[in-house]
Image 1 (cartoon, rainbow, N blue to C red):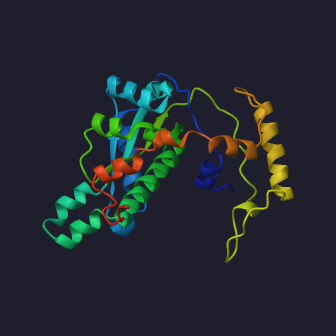
Image 2 (image 1 turned 180 degrees about the vertical axis):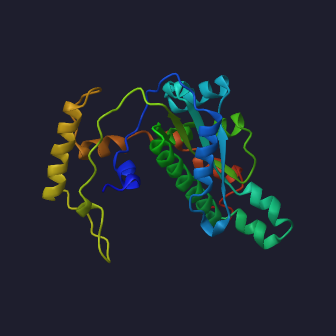
Length: 253
């Protein structure tokens, strides 16, 4: 018998084209509940989620990400690393307040938000929904912070466009496990590894045969292209983090 949870995870693909059907309040509440039951670091529940329904704000998200198709999703969630709530609960404790501004607690909030969004993706797929996780919300963090009135000790992490799929794209092949799963120690990659060479051929075949946006591409070339983008596009992230009250434990040069 196939385990339905494993089957759902194995069938994942990103969905960017949706029907006109919006998510119901019950579906939204179910997805938020799934997020709340995801693992959370030290049970500190350092994540908040914003449902974005205002067409003007959805259009701003489209501008920031460069993906206006998100405006046609059944729903849009913005996941926030949130220590502001815990700062209110911690009161006047100087030690607690100092910790909440630290890199450690920033990472804890990012972990909680990331784990929560994956829970929503999986829960959504179990209900027949499809989605795309969007790190491109970080293309203009100051505008994002202003648009959603994010207070200090909060930071946007990821967006999620989710809805009823209007497509069923081909699934992208993943790396061979031998190239990413090791025992007891890290094993550096050899670019001439036969498994990588074979995987490059697999990716080339995938891009040539898929139903849309066909192109000549290997995984190795994709990585080169991806990390050759202008690093200034998101150069303001560190400044925005500090503006939001994080990284106070990082020495200034």
